[in-house]
Image 1: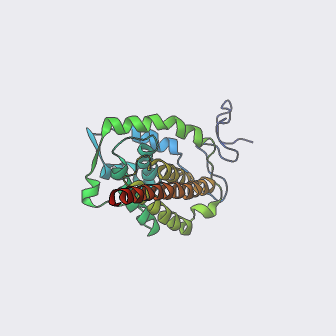
Image 2: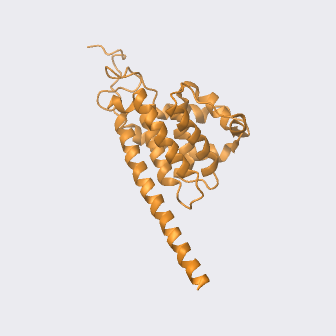
Image 3: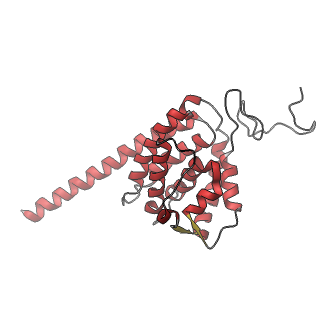
Amino acid sequence: MNDGRPPDTPPDPQAPEGVDRGDAAPTGFPPVNPASAVLDDFLNHDHGARIALGDLVDILGDRAFGALLLILSIPNILPVPGLSTATGLPMLLIGAQIAAGRDRPWLPRRLAALTLDRDAFLRVIAKAKPQVDRLERHLRPRLAAMTAPTAERLLGVAVMILAGILALPIVFGNQPPALAIALIALGLIEKDGAFVVAGLIAGLIAIVIIAAVLFGFGQAGMLIFDKLSS
């Protein structure tokens, strides 16, 4: 049966079972825009000397919620020093807007005007692109309930919590929550509920790790205080 390809075009070997990249999504799922295409569009955009957060919203358009979360989480996974607060606060606000059910993200003027070094930011996104490509082979629309509007609002709350943790000035404390946000973002972009679930599990693990680190710092601080006061 003719599937719409030219006769000599073989099926895409990297397309997950049930989804052919570039074709319609399986029955019951909306069409998806691959995460790799989101990153390609961003990397190929004609950026200025510095990249303003407000420009990210304009560039990504109607893909902005999941795409913004993915792009802002990447510098914290690799990581790039000094970016955790600059990217954590916008993600917290994005999470709040997802929880509120907004259609498009909005950033206040001061936050939208915040700029990032273009070369460093594009370099880290380009470095992460092959990893996203590999993950994308496993992405496909499934578990629709996990990316439905009601579930998305709850995911917004989860993103707020994780972004709040990410923004804390904890050494190496930004990677676990950033990874969890990236998995959730991939799930939102490609309507893959399994990746959303993986992101939530990673988020719980991240919370446990950060709580253990903070508890350790607290215990150490109490011991130092006891020694100094004795």
